[in-house]
Length: 167
Image (cartoon, one colour):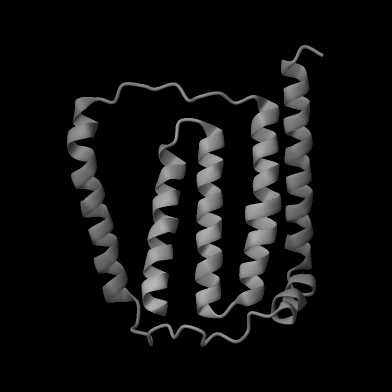
């Protein structure tokens, strides 16, 4: 049953990820990204990372995506303009993509050593202490730098939106 759930939610995550790229409107793309985040949370649950799954929902699917949607709406981003794609790209693109992905698969299969298969629920280090201790000791500087970078991006988006409005 775990393998079936894993495949279903992995398919949903990949489909929503492709939809993020294919959508022409940024709001729809952000909503598809929420689908990816929710599917990843279920995959974390299946693998035994309960805290990581909860953080995925609360932090990413909740707070960060609300922030993304707020910035998109603040910038008043409209629908993406379509461009004509040359016939050569339409003809050669899909076979080239299949060839590239196949080559990556062969390279990964030959170079990476064989490992045991993943056992669902076998991961036991997904608790709050196991994640929080390294985050606030070993990785505290990158954590804080990321926080400041996100704050700078928000302030920049607000300033850009204010200048466009004629204020």
